[in-house]
Length: 240
Image (cartoon, rainbow, N blue to C red; front, side):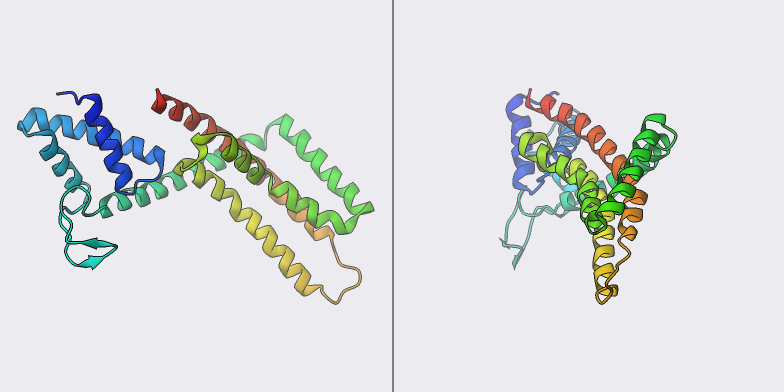
């Protein structure tokens, strides 16, 4: 038995009220729950409410809570507990982390044998050599700006496109680039601390660090746009 539009909308609002904040996770859960509810109604002859309550429990959510904790006081039913959905989201985070790490490695290997990227990479290295020769002190700042490029794209799309907001996929892809940016920033802090008393500081360290991290940063941008394109299309389908 197929659910009617109002019942599907009810399930979506039920997921929102149960704290499923990422829309891409919500779509996946909605698909699972709708199919499971339809099967239960057809096979067991139960009502929509009974079927949904059973499916709610099948995710590990309880239907009764007692005592005061997490702002809940002796609640019963569909909104008593959402720990099952929290576990589902955490599991999804781990799966997506593995997915995008593997995709990043695959894209990096592909990019390192691409003539277009090798030309780009050579140009970047030459640029940093020139910058270091004439303005050595600005090398660190330029490196910081270059490695922040994924964040500029992410921030731009976050303001421009609603599909990137509250998307678990986009959040994970964005956070992957943060690791290498953090390493670079940590390197700046260690450098300033270690060479604080030095008059002639070896600013070439920043040029080398940027050149080494640049391929990873570019790969992160490529993976970000792959995820962005895929989930923008998914978001548009969700609205239709």
